[in-house]
Image (cartoon, rainbow, N blue to C red):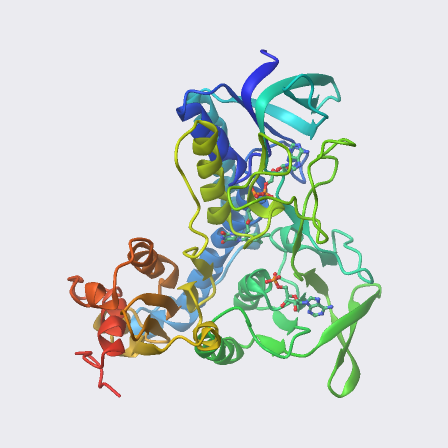
Length: 479
Ligand code: FAD
Ligand code: AMP
C-alpha cells in the first residue's frame, strides 16, 4: 500500500465517505480510514447513519408502521386479515440485512471509485515538512504512518450519557441499543423528546410497549414551527405516547428486572418504574483519540472541531465535516460538506448553503421542514404571509387514509421570497424536497403557484399552500 496520498479522510460515515468518493472523482489519490465495530465484532463502513442510526431506525419504523396499519387501518379498506402477529426476531433480521447491504455498498463504492479503504483508526499527528501525518492503527493493532497533502476529519458523534445514568447495554441503553432489542419491553422509558427519542418511542409503542417519554423542557420540539409541534404533540398523545414535558430525569436505580427513574417536574420529585430505558438526550462530537498533542486543530468549548464556513480548521489543509463540527447533526448536512470540501481541495468553487438544509422526523405523521419557522420570521421583524393547506382537503391523502396534518408556507410580503415550509403529514420527508429545490433556486411563492402539480398527488398540498399564502387556494376556503 502507498503511504502517501493527496487526501486522507478519517471516518467513513455519511460525511466522510462522500468526501472520499468525490475526492477520487476529482482525480486525487485518497485513503479513507474507519474503525466502526459492530456489537457482533464485525467492522463496517457507513458510520452511525448506516450502522446504528438513519437506516436501521427507518427499517424498524417501516415494519412497526405496517404492523400498526394492518391492525388499525386494513379493516377501513375492507381488508380482513384476522389476528395480526409479528416476530421481533424476523424484523431485526430484516433490518440487519438492510444495514449490511448498505454498509457493504460503501465498500463497493470505494472500490469502484478507487478509494483506498482502511479498516482501523486514524490519528492526526503534527505535520512534517508541509505534509500532514496520520497514524493508522489497523484492527490487529499494527501501526503505520501515512502522509497526505490534505486531511479531512469526519469522526462523527456519539450518544450523550446522563452522568447519573450510565449505559449498561441491557436495560439502560443508547439509541443503538434501542434498535437492537430482541423483545418488546412491556414498559419503556425514553429520556428526551427529540427526534431520536420520538422515532424510537414510536417503534416500540406501535409494537405494544407502554412508552413514557420524559422531556426536561416545557416546550415540545422547540426547533420546529410551533403550529407543527402542537399538531404533532396532539397526534402522538392520541397514539398513546405518554409525553411528559418539564420532566427532568435526575437518576435511575436498577431493580432485579426493572428500572426506577426519578425525575423532577413542576410539582416536585416523581418516579416511574419501567423495564428498559433509552437515553436519547442528544449526541456529542467525537474527537476521542483523533488528534495528537500539538496538531494546532482547535476544539471549541462544546467539543466540536472549530471550522470556518468552508470547513477549514485552524491548520491549513486540515478540514473537518459532519457531526464533529457545528451545525445540525444530520447525515445530508455532512454529505454536502464532504462533497464541497473535496471540490475545494481540487480547486473548484463550491459552498454549502446552510440556510437550506431540510429536517425530517420519521414519525407518523411525518414531520419535515426547511428554512425559518414562524417564530423565527416573527423575531426577525420581516413582514410575512402564511399559506396553510390541510391534508384532509387533499383527495390523494384521503384515498390513502392519511388526512392528518397540513402543509404551511411562510413567505415574505415585500418580495414573495419563500422563507420557510413546514409539513406534518403523509410523506412529509419526500414532499419537502420540492420546497428545498424552490428555496435553493430562489423561486418565489408565485413561481410555485404557477408550477403544475400532478393530480391527485400529495405534492398538491404544497401548491395549494403557496396559493393560500395569497388567499387564492382552490381546494380549501381562503381565510
Ligand atoms: P458518523 O456517522 O458518526 O461517522 C463517523 C465515523 O467515523 C464512524 O464510523 C466512526 O467509527 C469513525 N471514526 C471516528 N473516529 C475515528 C478515528 N479516529 N479513526 C477512524 N475512524 C473513526 N440523520 C439524518 O439525516 N436522518 C436520519 O433519519 C437520522 N436518523 C438517525 C437515527 C438515529 C438513531 C441516530 C443515532 C442518528 C440519526 N441521524 C439521522 C444522524 C446521523 O446518523 C448523523 O448525523 C450522521 O451519521 C453523521 O455523519 P458523520 O459522518 O459526521 O458521522
Ligand atoms: P435532541 O438533542 O434533539 O436529540 O433531543 C434531546 C432532548 O433531550 C432535548 O429536548 C433535551 O431537552 C432532552 N433532555 C436532556 N437532558 C434531559 C434530562 N435529564 N431529562 C429529560 N430530558 C432531557
